[in-house]
Image (spheres, rainbow, N blue to C red):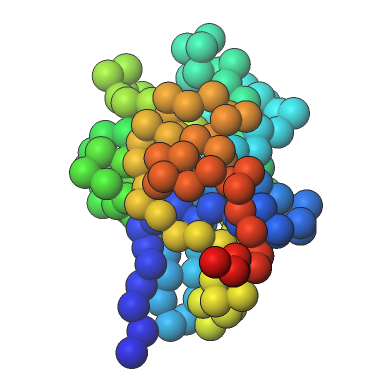
Length: 185
């Protein structure tokens, strides 16, 4: 019987060497028998949000927000926009991760967030990670991913270069001690 893993973090195991996912922290927001989707939350790109806003003709006068890095959310549809944000979604067009953390691909929700000066924190990403039916389950069984509970603190409070290790340590696992073989003892 199928059991959805979403919402969760998927932590790339230390032996996963695919450059798209090496030491990745994926925020998994959809997982069904039809496949899975998530966004990588620890891959800042060279682009800034002001570039995306200007090219889309979206108004946002906040210099701090305009100066945020855009993240590479994954290798699939690298120009599709996604937003990870704190707070409510009055349009109900987002995936709920926790009571206060959500993911959306809706331009209307993004515009509403930009217009709301009392919104919570947000992260803008281009692209996503996707898996065909059964693919993610097979990759987890092969030891490529460790699913763990997701939280806003890892996304917004932990420095990007420490997110992968921090997420492991939060589960009581030191990724430096990871082994692919069982010990004898």
